[in-house]
Length: 244
Ligand code: ZN
Picture 1 (cartoon, helix red, strand yellow):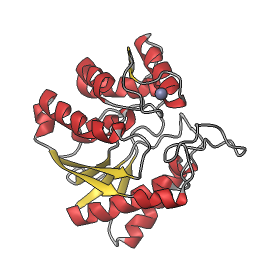
Picture 2 (tube, helix red, strand yellow; picture 1 turned 180 degrees about the vertical axis):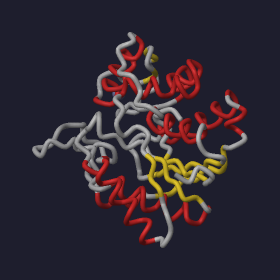
Picture 3 (tube, protein in one colour; picture 1 turned 90 degrees about the horizontal axis):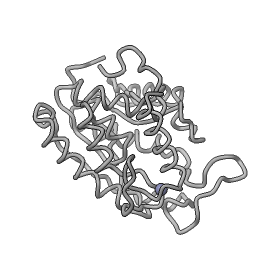
Picture 4 (cartoon, protein in one colour; picture 1 turned 180 degrees about the horizontal axis):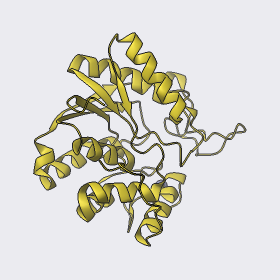
């Protein structure tokens, strides 16, 4: 892996991408972040991005020295090709094909393509994303084989190596909490609880021990269950090297 490279983290302001950002800051000499505005029904997650970056920099000065520019790309054109609970007023539900209707077809491939073009311009050759196959939510563009194929396509299309790192690929949600604890101690998990956003419904008001959210949507339930398993010591051990 080109550890002397600049890494560009796909950073939404949620728990998973914050874990990816911490992982990258612990690993690479310079780290930039990119977010995508695709007309999310709730902008809370995007609003959390700057807060999380600021809090990370304040709590971890050695990471602050590595944390470079933030980029926000306007991808609202995705609204023209999606019909989902994230971008209109429909309720979240499972469709007949088993995929949640929050699914934007191939969304992660589009994100990775735009991120790679930005990385090329910024002199970065590593992308870091929170795609995860373990807590598979029905998104085929999060699968490891999909990401590996995209890495090959990007490296060929850019005529230079473009590595896609997915530190959460084989972790479950309890292990994600364990990973961030290993990277930044209990203070990092406290920061994630307080400042990241995951709730599909965009609710911030209610504060649970796992963070803010409605507590009922699939994203809140997954986050709460993972946090409970981690807190009770039931998280599986991290794979060797996961936090390095
Ligand atoms: Zn929720």
